Length: 119
Image 1 (cartoon, helix red, strand yellow):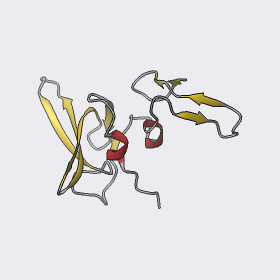
Image 2: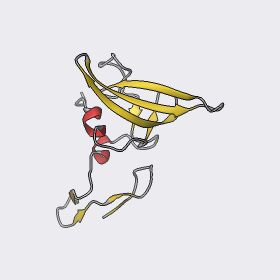
Image 3: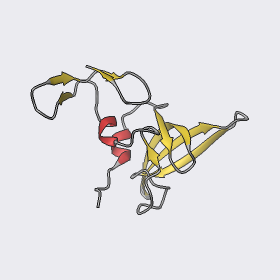
């Protein structure tokens, strides 16, 4: 079974407005903030509907519906990219290719798809 990734830990230092994807609702959402309370940690995201209203969605620290830690992970980095480890990269991180013969200092992603980056 796949290891549970603490999505809240990855997102806690990301800027407000970071683009993410909600698999359950098939919509793009934006990170608002990561909350830590006595009841636990959760991720708050927003989205704007077709009439311009702002919608608020809460997810567990694992990216599942809030309070459903054993549920399906529905909060994803991007519709076509589900690898949270890439979003954990920070400016200045040193990335090494699988053969170990190339090293790159990570500067940031080119866009909100998180598919290509500058280094």
